[in-house]
Picture (cartoon, rainbow, N blue to C red):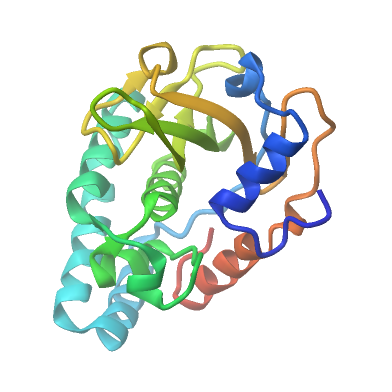
Length: 235
């Protein structure tokens, strides 16, 4: 997996396919992750000011709405948090390619950037949901970024590279899938249109049947974390 740095969804999937990595256990590759909280109230003003400077009043309002959603959801049950976060991101972003938004083939936007533009691709939806849930106290070990092949079209005859967020109530539990292609949350067994390839988080890249690889090989993940810190979001 030495070629990971700079690869997009299709590059990742092509690499996994070339290694014969699509296995039925793909949903259960174990992750791990450490987190830090940036949700303190005194930080909100700086985050919103950054959004206003970069994206104007509309972007600042979108980020303010996001922070308000987090505050309103913080005391809810974990199930309610999943539903609130999934709904927020699925309704606040309009799907668009990285080329059209950022002028790059594959750009991983921070939550502030995605909300500021009001646009994002599948990865940006997942990034926003992931960091929202972590800040709401969901254990990071229960969450993972999952690359899949998604069957689309009337008869599912076409397959596209896609990313979803997986939530595992326990390490061996069937995951729930948070996906921008569908408004609701469904268990993996009810998403026959998705074929998992591999998952990753800040601690590693997890491919069924292979040893975990260092996430440091994913340059875009490192860049994402740096930009989040620069914007006042401490991932």
